[in-house]
Length: 442
Image 1 (cartoon, rainbow, N blue to C red):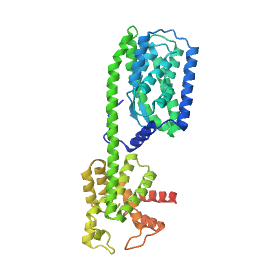
Image 2: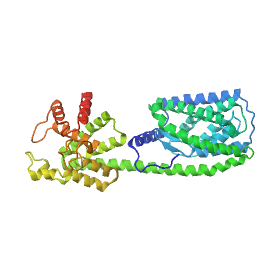
Image 3: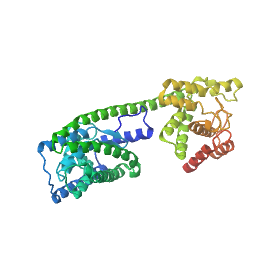
Image 4: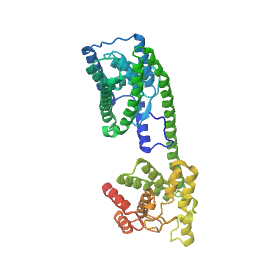
C-alpha cells in the first residue's frame, strides 16, 4: 500500500475521498443502517452455522490466539484511504490465523479483532456504536478462505499447498468484492464496475502481504511466538498510513485553498466591473456543460472551471473607461484590451500551483482556430483544449447579453454566428458540443 500521496490530488479522487469522509462521520441511518444490520446478520448466521457444522482438528493456546487477535486489531488501525473507503493491511495477520488457528473460530476472532481495533481503541469517524454494527460487515471477507481451507482439509502450512492458498485468496477477494461492492452500490450508489479498478489494486497489495503472512505461518508452526515478529512490520505500516493520511489532508486543504482563491479573485473582478464578474460566472456554467459533453477528465474539468471564472481577471489592470466604452475602441485602446490575457497569466503565476497552470490557459483564451487571435497567434490544436472551450462559451455568452453599445442576440442568432465562424475563430468540435448542450438544456 503506497504511502505516496500527490501534492495535488486528481479532482475526481478528491471528490470521492471527501464524500467518503463525510459519509464516515455520519450516523448510520436509513439504507446504511438496514444494510449493515442485514449484511452483518448474515455474517453472524454464516459464522455460527459453520462453527456448528465444522469441527476443527487443530488446537491452539490462548496466548497464541490472543497475540494474533491483538496483532490483527493493530493492523486494522492502519487505514489507507482509497477513494470511497479505506484499505487495511490485515492480510499479513489473517494468513497465519487461517493456517494456525482452528478454522471454526477464525471468523469470530477476526470480528473480535476488528471490534477491538475499531471501537475499543479511540479513532475518528463514526460513533463507537455505529462502528460496532459495521464490524460483522467488514468481517465477511474471512468466510471465503475459511470455506476453501475447510473443504481442502486442515493441514500444517507448507509451500506445496500453494494452489489451495491461491484458491483461498481468490475466494476472499470474491466474497469481499461481492459484499462491499453490493453495499456501496445500495448505500452510496457507486456501481461495482466503478469500484473494481481501485479494489483490484487493493487486492493486489493484499496478495503481496499474504505472502509475508504465509512466511510467518510457516515459521510459526513449531514456534507460535514467531508471529510476534510481524509487529514491527505492522508498526511500520501504521507509520506509513499516518503519513499518507497527513499528505491527503494537506492535498485537500491545498485544493480548497486554490478554489477559495479562485472565487475570491472572481469576486474582485466582479467588484471592479459587475458585468465582467457576472459574465465570467455565466461562462463557467456553459464551459462545464461543454466539458461534460466532450467527456473531459476531472483535472481538465477543474482547470476549465477556474479558467472560465478567471479568464477576464487581467481586466482589473485595464482602465474602466476602456472596458465600458459605449463606442468602438481605437487602436491604442484595442491594444490595451488585448493585454488582459497576459495580465491574467501574470497575476495567476504569482499564486502558483494549479492557478499558475490555469494562468497559462487563460493566456490562450483569445486565440483563434485559424491563428488570427492573440497574443501568440496559435493555430488549431496548438491552442489548449480548455482555452478553446472558454473562447467559444465566452463569445456565446457575450453575444446573448445586453451591452451598452448593442442589444443581446437570441440563442439561435448566436449559434448561427458561432457556426459561421467555426473553423476560423472557433474549434468546430467545441461549437458542436456547445450546440448539443444548449439543445439538451432547452
